[in-house]
Image (cartoon, rainbow, N blue to C red; front, side, top):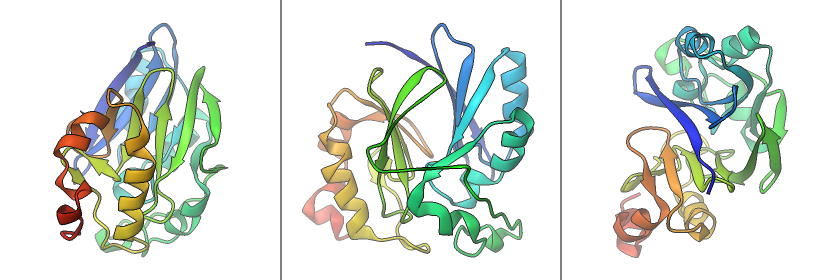
Length: 217
């Protein structure tokens, strides 16, 4: 199995995981969820002589997107998001940026479909539509590397909240059970907040994926 180089930058008021990803022998990189600090991310890219090839958004909440437009402009790259997330990204009241008085709205350059395969920075990526935390949430699976970036859909021993605009607990659990849990047990999962985990670990230890735990949502 090929390996990825994954740099985790923990950024912003709610400690969002921003990921800078590249192949082991590559200087081309992808940024997932740039949070609120374009300068820090851009400096890391420069310090390591990396060429950013695109920005992937797992969903539209403010803590994942505030720096997206600035970082895209600095690096002359496109912003990618799942096609059902346009409304969330474009409305400060739905993406909750208005709640913190830092109103943010953006229009993605490229809209992605469920199960679409794209190649970016020389890496093959499967788009998995995982609604529930938001209606257009997406997880990004790198099948050649057995790595999944789950955004705020799946966490270590937890799942994403569903009480914000466009959230839906039944859709969240359906997406996790019927899409993410079908991946191999050894797939590494990198969530939007907190520590990494694996699909197998969550199958055994995530209470929210049991009938009793689902009632907690």
